[in-house]
Length: 243
Image 1 (cartoon, rainbow, N blue to C red):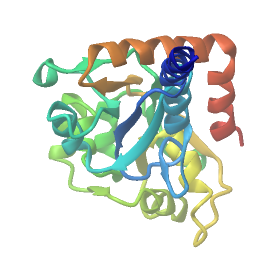
Image 2: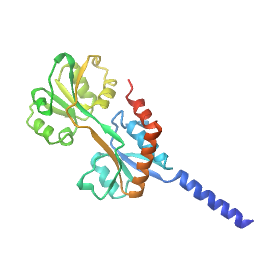
Image 3: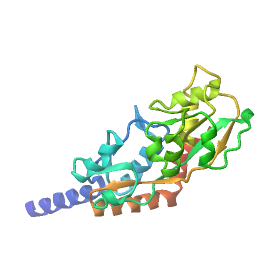
Image 4: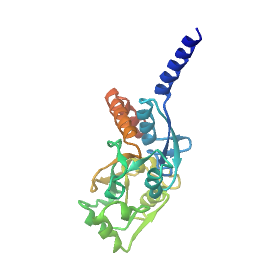
C-alpha cells in the first residue's frame, strides 16, 4: 500500500512538472506602448511571448533593462531570454526564435503639408525628430542622412515628437506606426485630430526572442506556431491596435 502511494505521488509530480514547467525570466526594454507596457506589465509583445510559452507549460517574469544589456544578460544566464531581439553575428552563440512581432517604422507628416517623401534621402529636406538611437537602429542610409542634418534631433519620450508634429514645430517625425498611434492618444497639450500622411520608406523589422537554451527556443517556436494557428495571435494584435 505504501509503495502504491509513493508511485501515485511520483506520477502526480511528473504530471504537474510538465504542466506548470519552469518560470522564465525574460528581459524587455522599458515601456514602449503598445508593444511593452511596464505598469501593469502587459502589451502586444509581452502577451504574445507569455501566451506562447504558457502553451508549453511555462510562466514568465519580465525584467526591464536597457536593450544593450539584454543580450549580455541572456549570454551570462542572468536571464533565460530577451524579447525584441535582432539576430546578428555578434551574438551568434545564442538561440533566436522565429519572428514573433513586426515593427514598422515610418515617416509621418501633416497631410496639409503635401510632402513627397518617396525614400529615406528625401528626409534631408525637412526638419526631423525621431526616437532615441534611431540613427544607429534604422540603418546606414538613414544614419548618413541625419549625420549631416542640421534640423534633426532624437527624443527619449516618444510623446514629444508627436506633440511637435501636431503643433507644427517640426516637419516630419520617424517612429513605429503602432507606437505613433499609442502616443497620439497620450498627448493632451495639442490637438492630435489633424490628418497625417504616412510614408512607408523603411523595411519592416521582424523581431525575435533570444534564448540561451536551444530546447527552450524550440518550445517557444512551437507555442508561437500554435498561438498563430488557433487565431489567438491575431486577437492579441487586434486588442492593442484597433482604434
